[in-house]
Amino acid sequence: MATLQLEIPDQQAAALKEYAQSRGLTLEQWLLQLAGECAFSGSVEPENVERSITARKPHISEVIRRIWSDLPEDARAKLRHDGASQVDHYVYGLSFANSEG
Image (cartoon, rainbow, N blue to C red; front, side):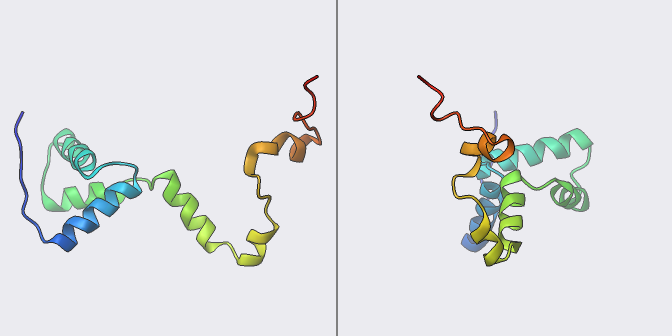
């Protein structure tokens, strides 16, 4: 196994790390994944690497954050605060919390 060391500006390194974290990966995991995709496609030309990065689907957490940020404050206020913990109650009118016993 080889070790690769890159020297890039701190700001660029921070941006890459943030990008990787937004996808639930460490910077090293993301770079290894990217390198694997380039090797699999048979081309490491800069335009192919860029296309590989931009063609990826966003991580589900990124999609949820985007939807949540676009939701108006008054609509957010109307949402249930217990999330899915009482989904059966909201969907079927059932409550399983008191059914034990």
